[in-house]
Length: 512
Image (cartoon, rainbow, N blue to C red; front, side, top):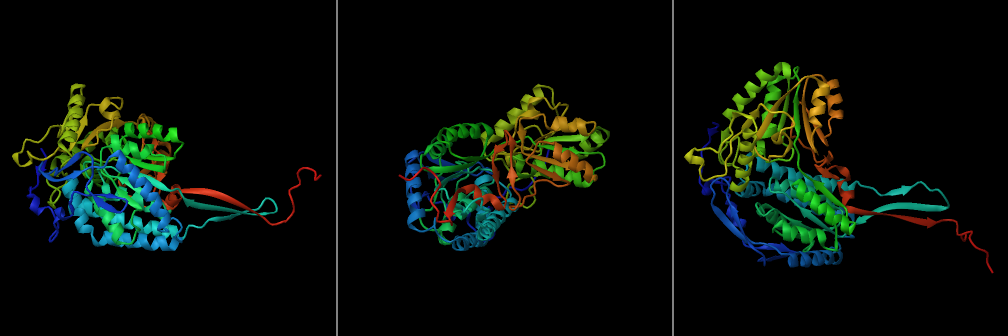
């Protein structure tokens, strides 16, 4: 069983001098107004202890309508939609700096809300701050085009805000996901209505306060926590919402895509994954072992890009698997505020139990548990939502556990013979989100990286991101692209203008 880190009380959750509960008023952010929601009550549960630490009244479909209409009006009347790019960029820079200044509070609050380690939540806050600043810089340097004339005209291509953007974010990395959607959408001059996850709404609400304090005009941003079946659906269906960006499960994403299609509305979807990690026999073993462990067990495996299918070349399969299992057993389970913790609790008991059920089903179908595989019985972890790092062997790529996303700290190990064999197995999935390749032969890495169907490929590293690099999911892993310098354009409408220079009437018809 994995080692157990200490389990501090809730009072110890924050960085020194930080009380994460100070921001937990029962208010949602409706077009610049902080009001008690009229929807069902949300209970926020600390995954480390199972305790309810706050309650919040959620939004409703009626709230969505108010936020959309008032947001559209605010973007116009405040001048946000027509503001010069460098002026909007100045506000985005201030938001990024405000996130930096509040990163310890953000980290403590997100650890309380999601169970993640403080190391990870601090990194997510830093990522969010950098995202706002990067989008500000991209906005200031994003020129429209004077296109090449094909007649006696001057021709222009320009971009304008779409109006109201819907942003639906996941619970596994709230502040970073918020920034990836809000920063480019706001940079383009839009109003944004954000629906944070029911399981982890607090950091997004705190972000709304920071945006307001940094000078974002009142009403341009709304944050409406609530169930997807009401708030999310209302947001996608609303006739004045011009685009939605969604990160979450594939089945939900497919449903929302159907709703968007009925409106002829563009939608960006970042969905699930069952990402392969490929270890060739010439890999640097130490680098590969650490990278593979990080790729699947960091974030407690609750990551769409988790490297959950570990393919190891047959000549090193037994030795590498043995070393991997030994290191996985040494990973420490514990609360996110303990620096000794490697694997923190999962988001909820219900999700933890669904992961356990998938492992039990795999074992019933013939999988062999090499480590982990059961909810811990240590009394120090009994009240929390813990599941140990788990490695399963004795499987083939066609097994259910190798095809369905677990979204937890569960990996399968599968041997392969050569490049063609591993590419075929890696591509035998409905997903296409990410891939890791471990080899010292960069020619091989490029060949395999190009052949594997994945939007992001890492070579001799894993789960490293840059806001400047586009992120795309293929197949059932998504639709459209986030990040990158062109991200602002994805939240714009493009139009062309022709200016006649000849002064000559069009040569059509005969004057009478």
